Each structure stands twice: as C-alpha cells, then as structure tokens.
Figure 1: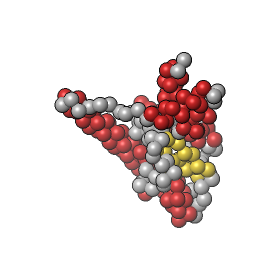
Figure 2: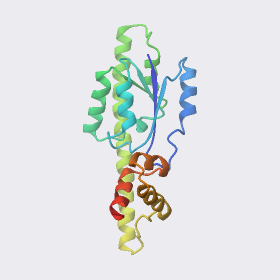
Figure 3: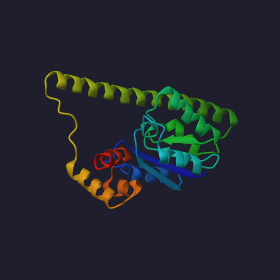
Figure 4: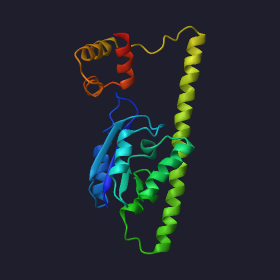
Length: 204
C-alpha cells in the first residue's frame, strides 16, 4: 500500500503546500510514510485537475489518497463526484482525510473480521458522500454571496470589476515577444494559460 498525498488550493496566490507538514505528521502517527505528493492550484469545483488525474493514473490498486479535508479533494456537483468515485473505485483507491476518523481504517488493513471491515467501509462511504455534499454547498453559498455583493455594488455604482495586474501583463507580454512557450510563461509569471492567450491576442 502506497500513501499518495493530494494538496490543493483554489488560486495561484494561495499556498497549496500549507498542509504538507501536517499530513506528514499524521501519516507518521499512524505508522506510515507518504510515498508521493501531488500539489496543484486549481478549483475543487472541476474535475479538470492535472495533478489529481496524474495521482489516479500513477496509483496502484489499493493505494491510499491522503487529504487534509474532503473539500481539498472535491467541491464537485453530483455528476462529477460520481465520476470521481468511479475512477477511484476502478483502482480500489481509498480516501483518508484528517477530518474523517472512519477513513483511518484504510491505514489499518488488518481489521479483525470481514464483517467489521464491510460495516466500516459502508459508514465511511456514507460520510464521504455527506462531506462532499457539504463542501459543494459551501462552494455554491460563497459563490452566491459574491454574486449578490457584486449585484449590490453595481446597483450602487460602486463596482469597478477586478483590476488588471499591469506589471504581470507587461512581463507576460515581454516573454511572449521573446518566444517563450505558454508552459514556460506559466511557471515564470505564475499565471493562467487563459491570461497568456488573452495578452497574446492583444499584441498580435
């Protein structure tokens, strides 16, 4: 059994590695070491996450995915959550979360009886579904509050939209003109491909 830790933050400005030391300590406390880390800055509301898909592709049958909280793994709608569960099930991958004690059983494969193991698995599956639903609701509630705030600001004539990062745009423009690839620019400027494409269109 390999333990593969997945760390995620929603934006480039957030530190996706924030919980790394906590996960290492958690694994050590349960007599295990983490074999690999997968870190990315992507929204948990989408399945289009390269590092998560790489983790699933790299994993062997029976491996464990260790996360700080279920919302690090998913803030998905029901259809995408079902798809992710299917991908995990196909490789018999277990999810262990610090916030979900019933998931710790995956770190103790010597559970005494098949019956007890089946009961714990059923309970854990139900808890995972519940926490994933809560994470999705939290995501949707925050989005709704943001939209309400923007609508209110617009009605009061106070909404100016998100300000452009002029300096970053200058750097990206310069890198494009000097022939750097999109992948290189992403690493150097820590920006999205969408922003690079937008600036590339402007300077044509």
